[in-house]
Length: 469
Image (cartoon, rainbow, N blue to C red):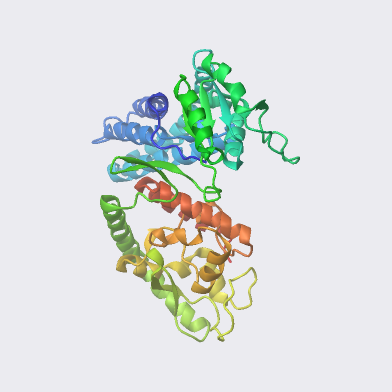
């Protein structure tokens, strides 16, 4: 699938309006309730209103799932996750501002009442916003009819998603090709109606019956055919998109790019370069250093427990692949009995090799704490694709196309795959393929906001103990 680059002005304006509406849904109840409880007279209390407005706007003005999610309940669930950021901002701000114990009961009441009002308003705003966008995009003036030239795997996926996402206001009419393609009996709706050969499309295109044409170039390498088709399309008023259809594009996120003024199609890239790379490193140093200082007593207790529980070293060191496939030493608290030199196996549930203390360490992820040393030294990051043992890397790089692309950046203590349920043993090839998919999404969609989101979600995942053993 083609990845959306910058949102068009149409959707950017809609997102700004949604962001403003969500910000008002959060700040107005807070303001009214704080007046009712006579808290506005406190020192810097009034600044929290502006902070709530700003954080709410930033959280929801780029909430693209509003126009891409097919399921309303899934959308509202993601909205709740984003709203939690706003709640955390309020709590941290109040902790910083309120020092008078006599007003703490009133502040606690404010928080509870604000949560009871703001969250339902927030969800109602998202639901109404989605409905309004649907109605707006599907008016007679805005609804667009689309047709495909060629029907390869990528085109089928795009066609299916367009038909399942009516909020986009794009109606798929069918496809033109030299001959009909075979339909999968298990997915009868995966192929739109066959409209005939290419020549039959020209009268309808010239009559402006179609607003969008999706064309796959691999069917049109014949110079005479491609010249005729593109000549006809250029002589129309139709919007034209290309759908890459090559074996390299399957299961890969593609995006438009430009280098030295030349338009390119990016198969794999990352925004973690230059200043962005510096900012990510600064975040690793600041948050990693703070975590190391605060957790040093915990690490000392864990070290003593590991030493007392079983024979062997306190730290487990293993060579793994780092950025660009370079070998690095990754440190963990030893959670298993000393290895006997046998073949390396991933830890499974109820694995007899795990020590008594090790079970707790793995379940709580405390065994990962020494990797803060890797972060401070620069061989790892707080957030990034989790590093695997070298033997597993060599195995999977032969079985999964594009596996080594996950080493385009530094590995991390936690990652996008881990907070999406892919934590723990990867005992099947499918699980590793899913992990790779999430890792590559993170690499190509990285931002500081995504890193912070992953860190918060990691804390929640550790508390629940998902897939940890």
